[in-house]
Image (tube, rainbow, N blue to C red; front, side, top):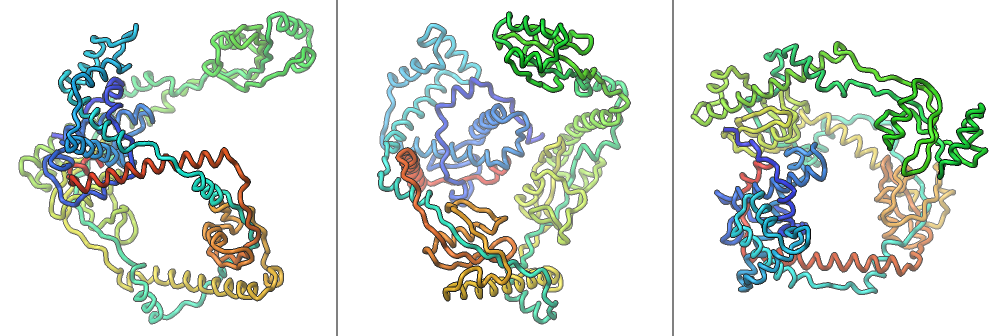
Length: 619
């Protein structure tokens, strides 16, 4: 059956229950783990395994937490691109390493410590304070845990805390170190710049012999990526619409269910004057009743007019204001209206009534949406049938023929989704999971059934692979010519810049050697400030800060080179507050460095092996 069906989301209680188990993530990548693989677990840490189900539960909790924090647009594919599977694995491995170290050290957690930890946990406290047994049991029930399982989890966590506390002792960076960093970061410099852009005219085209020599001397610049030949069955809802007929009644129902999406609400342009007390507001209303204009009356009363612009009922912050504004049959003044902010007098004009887009205007788009929903449902059933056929031993061709499915044949595609001509192969799904699967499945083997992010499915077979290789000269000639021209233009600009720099080093002034080019004063700027549009590129800044006052440097800019004469060098003004802030930052980084080194030592001691195939199912 479908391997990619997902579990239901965990409740917020799960987050409460397991928040104490999640250690801070450190910069320790999965790529550092040992190369061999384990078969039945996502990772093996020492003699202990992180099982697939354990990992899946933790991944589900983290994924749902992301969705709660970042919104429902977070998909499994986006989470994989952002590195959530690796993040979850790193945290799980770190926890297991510390548990093993606690066991090696013989650290024990008594029943009394566990009992106190539970009773003092505010998440299990009742309304009157203190431990609430009923609440505790409800939390466990909600998360499918027995009391014994929770106690075992908590006991492991408490033992980890003992180890963590031993390595997380406060470290205080010295003040002299913080002062040095402050001076380094805050130092500013000035420079005089002369920009030397590349010539706009291309040099004459060389002969084939010169280009072949360039191609041979720069072979690494003309490497072709690895290509894979793939046969696939793709169930794409958007390409299935010609097999689906939307029921007109269902389309009408969809329109009525989403009528608010096709409604432009009524608006009123509103101006308001706000008063602290009712008496002033009534005096203001009396002025308006005699024909005084809103702005003039507001000026007479020492108030100001606020123009809220065109607003709908829902955009007004108080229901009383909305009722007053939209109860007027036409333009006019209403109020005073009392709200927690004060007394409001409201002037209404430029009325726009509610507009509902007719069904016929949106019918075609709704038909497509309804048809697509039907296609997604049918493809889910069809994907199940396809999965069963392949699991039963049918090959691609037989399964496609029996289920009347087209085969997609891609002769060559690289990891970025382009063929040998640099074009996207026809029919290639845009979903990144397809390419990831194509390049993670061994040559000659079939992939598992995978999902497309838009409600579709796919399964593929890797027919062959062309490893990375240098493109033959005949194929790469346009690229070689472009590179040769770029190299010649760069060499010419660099030679001119070097010649200018040589004259400046002889003691001549920038204005005397500029030869019509602009002489620009840059700064003051720090090591991290750049202004590429004015010639202050990252390369120029780095070169200026590596030189002494009066030195001349040459560095790359976007369209050529810049010659810079280093001007004044100024230390930052003394700031005790900034120095203490840097000192606190350095102290925290030193603590984190100790933690990373400790985890790396534990990894060396116990060993970590990752099942990359299982982990790839979450990518």
